[in-house]
Amino acid sequence: MTTWFHPAQSLARGGWQSVVDDTLEGWQHTGLRVGELAAGELTLTAGDRERMIVPLTGDVRIEWASAGDRGTIELEGRASVFDGPPDVAYLGVGTSATLSGSGRVGVAEAPATEVLSVQVLRRADIPVEIRGAGRSTRQVHNYGTPAGLHAQKLIVCEVITPAENWSSYPAHKHDEAVPGVESRLEEIYYFESEVTRGATAPAEAQPFGMFATYSSPAGAIDINAMVRTGDIALVPFGYHGPAVAAPGYDLYYLNVMAGPDPERVWNITDDPAHGWVRAEWSEQETDPRLPYAAAEPHTLNQKASGR
Image 1 (cartoon, rainbow, N blue to C red):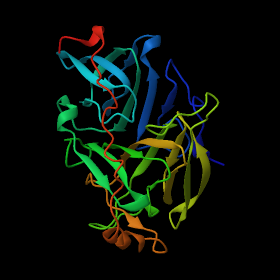
Image 2: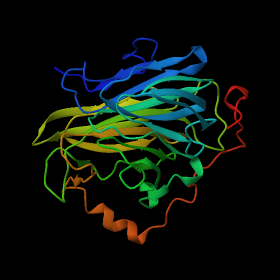
Image 3: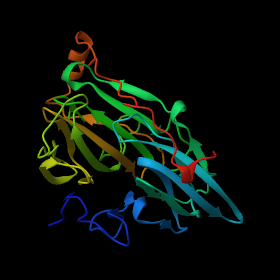
Image 4: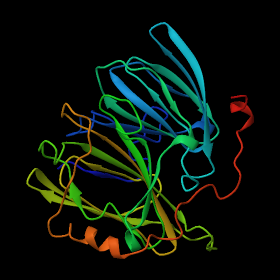
């Protein structure tokens, strides 16, 4: 039986803390690498995939090369994933890179054939969306969605759910091609959790959230898991959600999506048993705790300065 939930570092390989790619059974359209840069440089080989580099903590320096062209990109990161969006960079098909810095980095990937230019999105220009209302309020950083990034297949965003709130809700699916209604997309969830902003917790606190998936006509799947920093859930098909932030703990996830359809679009179908709750949001206020921005000033580390 294929396993769709992977605890932190259970997918470690080649110096990376986690690697999701087509070597996993039943997985073919998306990829993700998570690595710690303080331990040394990380290398990305050129190949038939497009990538987005996302600083999770700290700053990232990218030295890239592609078809006789090369360059260096300095990405300003953040103290944690709960401190607003970072700078991000897109690397096209056939681009190799070396990553260095002092923090942790995520690399979203998707197999592609179209060669596109390097793109850099600075944090000040990244769309920050407050989605939902009431206890379904969450914050979305749309730096890798079709509206904000030119790519062939890759769709990337990240979501912050403050303590006691729900996201990825109502449960929904994108595993059937229905033009204008639903698109086929694999999806990766990479999770982090920490003590909610402004709270004081004892040293033995263990931040966590909850995440669920369940079957659709496209296939059988069942995840009901406590999720902690570094855990990864794979959604090849089926209804997914909610992602719930436990009392006392904020929840973050990085989403990577891509699929076989010719159009790069995120169209979803709600579970008809739960889709009605969206209408309730019009009568509710958004959570005043959001948006989360940097909790304190963040400066570039010395190695990445001079941008």
